[in-house]
Image 1 (cartoon, rainbow, N blue to C red):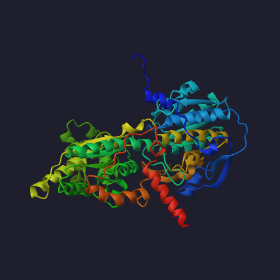
Image 2: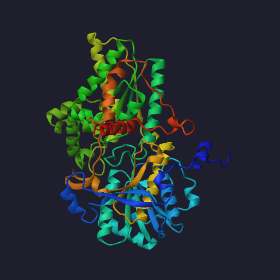
Image 3: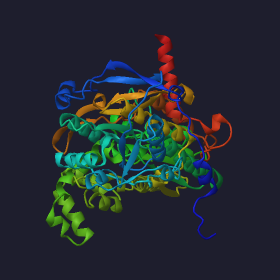
Image 4: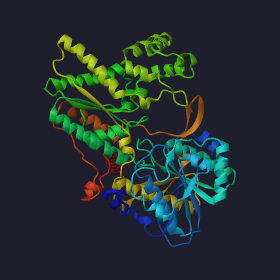
Length: 559
């Protein structure tokens, strides 16, 4: 049909009204909590952020009606996409308009670069209403420009003055909110009068701490990937002839891989943090998979699934050392870049690597060796996200099995397929949880602005409970900061949350993995995200959140 644009589901989702915590449904007042300190390096962080450091936690509770001045607010979407970003903006817009209908919202285009280059559009109801409860960041686009330099900050201040903007909401992950923390301090120091509020976004799940229970988009993305994994496992159990090696997004942490494993019950699940903790070599990881393949083949199960986190290579000690040396050899090396043939480059690398790293490099499949020596990122580092780790493991397992077959130790069959699930999950229709959670984050951002807060992250917690029982407020960005060594410098950054090997989700995986490894009837098939039907289906939380909440309640009952 000519001119048809929106699908029936999209049209229907536009009319979904996200739920709000009970405290936000009427008029609110702000309740101050205890003063905060940085998660580590308190003295250094206090010295770097003398104005915004030590601010208290705040919570919004039911209160008496009061009037708020109209404000102009800017918003940017920073970094990779995550389901629910449009609802953050919708909640922010609705919150601002409810507090004062004369308030205005400006969206800066293409992420932080839109702020710097003064590219924007006013977001009106006509625009907002076309994006409610939809996936993606296409309402204003996103970008990865970092806000780090004072010259950039001054450019932002210019456009804020021109548009009379009193606050900017930065929707992003740990790096983007680190930039938000720096910008908030700078603006406070310069007395610009511009507030900065952050929102916790990343499907990777590594922006979490004692206050932030979950970053938005994680729920939806992990459910999308789990549906695909379940489909593959159904196929594997039907044909009974393929091993599927599946790489999942999550460079710096394995939260997605862990969550998908808890939802789907694969035969093998590799957790990067566990590999690092046990100081496992690449050969150990390969041997673990080979052992599972052989054991299953002895039961005539010549099929299975292996989940691999995207950032695995950087957690394997010997691979980490190899990558570091490769970075030193390849980065800014004109002699290397001018070489025409892969053979010449390969030989050059071997000549310049230390003996141990040269041995590892030679053991890798040729296509992986080539990927490891490809062009570096802006910081001179290998682009690990582009390394096809699942294919590397698949080929190395195949090679080991061939040797075992020659010795008679393996008599089964091994046919393998590889998959990478990444972009499939970043712009999906947000689950009901993410639709509600993101709307609440945006609405809470409006309240933080109205109360004059700056250097805060919008906070919604108690998220395993029904939405009515959620608690909304704000947490100072400085409370999440620590000092880390990056690119040869000590810099303040928000600490990434890695998988806690003592936490309830990993302990659950650890207990169940031996059962999943050898059976053919333990696969779970989550199916697609449901928007209609029983609450226990449509509003179901991720397993990670459930297990962490269960552990918290158990610990609380012991005290």
